[in-house]
Image (cartoon, rainbow, N blue to C red; front, side):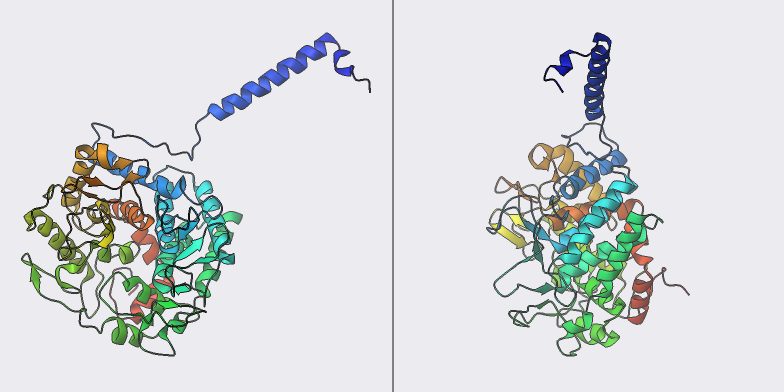
Length: 459
């Protein structure tokens, strides 16, 4: 072919080629200009929103943490938005990923992303988990988001983390119930979740048959962490899942003789005139009433020890009353600014509570309490958004915490704090995640085994 062939073409053909190529470039530019149905743009504070619109806005923007900021290789949730612990950008969190999975379901339900994109995103995640490090079916607290290798949480905590993995599987089982369509992507997603779920050796974590579950096990350090998990705290979901296990469940006696037997399980005293059935004095940080109850519906949930709606609501009311009375005279506290839980603070990180109050308000505390105290939580939301928005509203929703007495406002976001905001607001609005998780036949069987009553149990 002669080198000047392209110049020997008839003018008409050249014109057609030119028009075609121009049209192609125009079409490509037009396609690029078309809005992406799965792109969630960050927005600043918007004025004049109704309460429902404000809930939409906060859920939507907070979801960007799990969608736009997800690890690009694994899709798992990053531990935090700022680099920390000397591990760079690779740290992904198993528990926070479970919360993010549930948030993804909310995103589909609310129309921010398509069902197909969400199912493919979760399938990528589950395929990654299928090859990642696990120990007797249980994942570590942190993974490298590119390699799937364990990142130690501490020197001896370099293996299985049963609590964080329980939060992960609370999310995975919820996703399995939601993505129920008969297409290849959703079928594979459900199958892979079931494979991971059935591989968990819950009974291994009784440490040779003791009547209690242990939080950690490591192939390098064995049971050196020696953390027997007793209640009442954020770990109830772990015992429910362990009793619900398919191939390696634990007996009911592990729950009754392990979890329910400690000097801080039953309480029954009043704080700020409000009775607290279970747990530490003043209830402890508010995440105790959030993490296990993203999927477990506390409405009508009772066992021989407590009514869990009363427990969680009263725990929240005590926390609110403390902030309103403000015995330590911290700046900003009041009816519109309340909520103490574990979060970053001006000194580092701490589990804030009425009896460990450093003047730090964590937005996730009041906002994840929406099902229990909707009026108080809405007051806090309006204040956080309209009153403090220029200081604490960001591309991923509200920052982790602030301390007005110290004029300190975090720049960070944590997966375990952002996720419950989305999920618990949705449970308040529609009960979506509660209905999905409680529809799991294994969970219903496990709850019955532990002698719980709930409206979800078939008579």
